[in-house]
Each structure stands twice: as C-alpha cells, then as structure tokens.
Amino acid sequence: MNTSPATAKTPPGSPYDRLAALGIELPPPPPPIANFVTHVREGNFLYLSGQGPREADGLLHTGKVGAEIGIEDAYGHARLTGINLLAVMHEALGDLSRVKRIVKLLGMVNAVPFFTDHPSVINGCSDLFIGVFGEQVGQHARSAVGFGSLPGNITVEIEAIVALYD
View 1 (cartoon, rainbow, N blue to C red):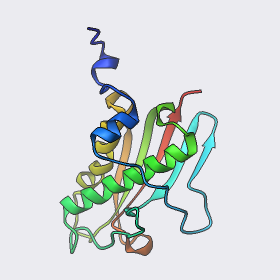
View 2 (view 1 turned 90 degrees about the vertical axis):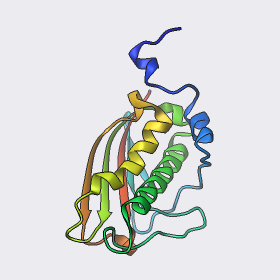
View 3 (view 1 turned 180 degrees about the horizontal axis):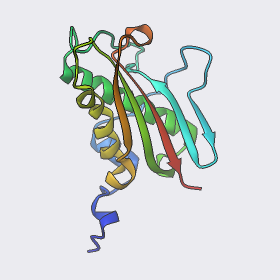
C-alpha cells in the first residue's frame, strides 16, 4: 500500500463521502444579507463572502461569546458556518473535488472585550475543513479575531479564500 505523505494525510473517498461519514448534508447556500454576492471566482481562486451560523431553517445563532455563549456552543456555530461555506463552494463549483487547497480563513468572533480564546472557537470551521478535505487540502492559513459586534448579533462570521484545480 502506498503511504506517501500526500495520501497518508488525505482520508479515503471524495469530499462528499467524508461529509456523509460526518453525518452532514449540505443545505442550500444562505442568500446574501445585503448588496454583495456569496462568492467571486477570479482565475483559479474562489473568494467566499463571510457566512454566519445559519441553520437550514433560517435560524441564526446570536449572542456574545464569553457572556451568554460558551466556547463549546461557539465552536459548534463556527462548524455550522463552515457547512454554509461548503454549501456556497458546492454551488459555485458544482463539485467540491475541484478544491485544490483551502488557502485562508478569516474568523470573526462576536465576543466580550475580555474574551481571549478566539482560535478555539474558529477551530470549529478549521476542524471541519480538515475532516472534509484532509490535511493536504484542508489545512489553511487563518486569522481568528474578536469583534465588538457582528451583523444581526451573530456569534461568528467566517470568510474563505480557496485555490481551485483548472
């Protein structure tokens, strides 16, 4: 069996197989909430607008992390936001196998001023992407920062830059 570094760090199957193994069904991509588009493709890069923790039924998770929202719930909200980003990727590309690399995430946490564990929250999205795409494709550069507020008082917002195969 070939266990080269590239194959050893990529789980077997397609991204859709890995989503199914995780028990995830992609929802329809959330619509933009203002005057922008959900994504822009430029060359072999896909730029994804910020998404939030919107459930398939439209429910938005809101609140301040470090006050009424704990790290575990906020991690789940970041994971849900990652699922929404995947839904936008799927709509934009038609096939998640076209993703060459998740290049960069910007994770924003609606947090109280004394909250300091923003990376643990945004790991919800990062861990999801590595689980869906494997380490070689899913591991990315990232910023995880706190904000005094986010649109609609959502708990997290995450945007992404994705490299594509031709």
